[in-house]
Image 1: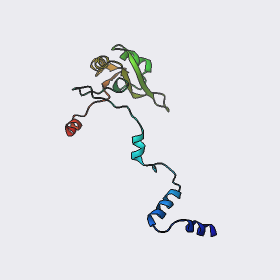
Image 2: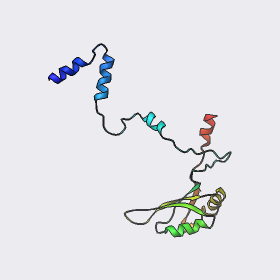
Image 3: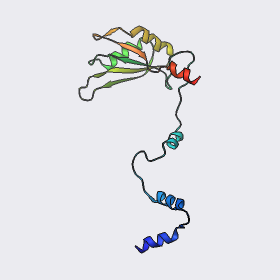
Image 4: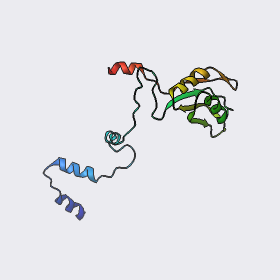
Length: 152
């Protein structure tokens, strides 16, 4: 108790704001979300995606990305890749499997270096049958026209 009294004597009691500031500094806070989110967000430098012009489609930082859905659950990654390599060099491909069953989850994300290759794959494979299912192929990043109008 004598330590508490000595601490209070060292603190200048003229201003309640100074005492409150001292209490806030001495309190240990733990856990997520206690940092200032605005300062934390501004500290990071993120790559931005530049608009490509009048197109509705946007280029990713890595390349032109298309999204393929309705892939049969028993499809193999090599089969899907072979189907899309016909339209140009596939730079990267994500083909996720269900951990529990080992079967395909039913979608793939495919990245091309050139827009023409991605566009050709969309036009050539959208709606085509693949292992008894009709593939759905479209762009991943599309510019929202309504957000453009609000800004301008």
